Image (cartoon, one colour):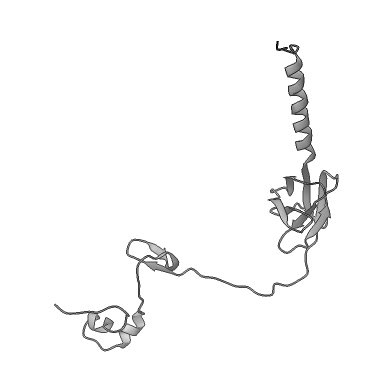
Length: 172
């Protein structure tokens, strides 16, 4: 004969309450908040990279500060470190431990910019719109107008003959 155990009317509610309290307490402990300001502590700095760094110096997750310099980051391990970095400022790394709120003052670096690389995007007009050369799916060739003006040719087809690779002009 099988025995059935009957639970009280509130036992399910009590189990659900303990389960929800456990989940809520775990999530609340893993979120750190803070604010990033300048060295004088007056002006907030926006778009600062706030990253969780593990013991092997790998980035676990990260976030950027908002317009007021505030951030909220859910961390995976309180033993990890938190890093604050922004272009033109010194990077600061702190251990998280049990700290839930951070106020960080970033100091400007005194180093000068060493090298600037400018990359241009060359475009070709196909008659309808301008297309970037890297996105072209057809073969194109270019001849400067100045080169054609300097040539002594009776017509445009004579001027183009032999100037572009893969172009043969024939009279019919």
